[in-house]
Image (cartoon, rainbow, N blue to C red; front, side, top):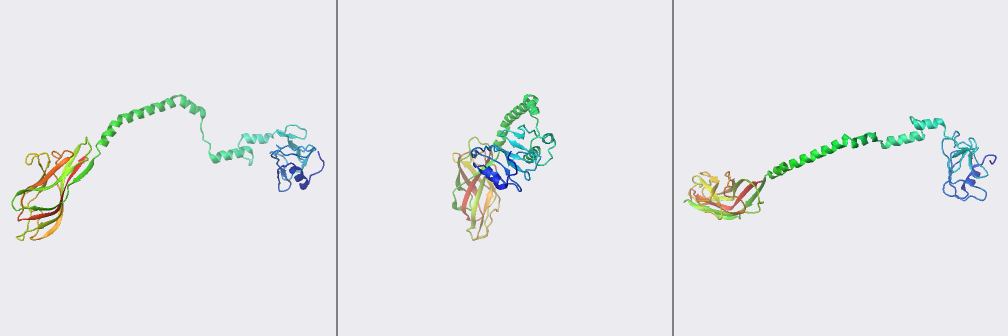
Length: 321
């Protein structure tokens, strides 16, 4: 052992030789040598040397020295690191104090001890409270097989309910409306006569659908009384009727919209705003799918010539699933 204390300058010089790294404390240096220093001839500085707790002496205020082999010593509590373990001045392994070991195994309440640090880390990140043996037993035993049985039951229920789901989806009601071209003028006469309306083409209904209800709509922009003789209107109850274009009037047609007596009353030589009338008759007995359909006023009759309908359009509205 080199007698006497090393000054800070001397210790720094000894540690820095060969590229050693030095960390300074508040009073005296606490050395830490890393890497592979190349000390001068006759000086061997262990590259693995590091100050490790616990030390009975305070490393900040302890007196540090170096022996002729370059080993660092705490003179107040002689011990050194030989690259594998801490040893005392006699070269014997320095055991960790019983009190420190007890602390590491027990409550971990002493600050800066290993046990306390580990406990703080566990507290911060969270450690699940699980029993591996219990989990293993659950997997190996009834817990696992029971879970498989539950999955099989769920699968069976899903399969049995598939048909019901499909049926429910099939019952989801949809609606499509098909419109005719616009006829700019239709005159209803004072002498009963069948009067044609524009045809309606129904196309695009999905194949295999179930028809729920089908109605006819008539839309009129303006209604005009062309007579100066007096107020004009529908005379007597009448119908707008519909048939498939391949059918025959008087045989295949059905009533679509019921027109009441005195409907669409307009004063002499006057124009009034039009109307939209939705029939309340279900006509799916005749309108039964994609096709062209004919519509007309059957025996149209008004009070005076003429009750003029401007910009007339007819629609067929289909509900299905």
